[in-house]
Length: 187
Image: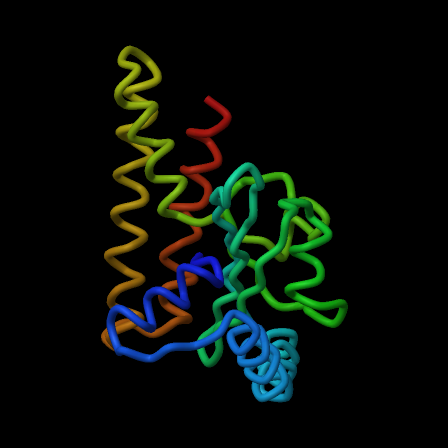
């Protein structure tokens, strides 16, 4: 997030290194070239993973907006910075060959990906459930029931992660949870 002039001042103030602005540009270009091959390998790796978590976060630089896009897998994390928050950037980040499970928030920029291969992030869903509870009334009743189902799911999932529950058992246990969540959402 630092401008070239701020970077120049930082290097001088903290390390006593006087660097010209042109040298900073040359170092940026050299670094980009040096990491080009590993970055390409990491991006190709994302496309082969069985599951990827994608997200984007924005900020302002002066009057312009930019977004840091991330694709996180078990083995590699890739990010890009773009001036756009469009679904095209998400497609660029994941690549044409990606066919794993995609875990995202509900933002429409991911709607190009098939719904049946996409999982909504439970952290976002749990915040929505808490908002339902805070509204009170019938909404709170449904929210509390959804929260209970989510807690049960995570209790079992943590056991799978820890190796004390087999994934096949988890899938079996999840069937009534799924039906109940669907029923509650319809309500």
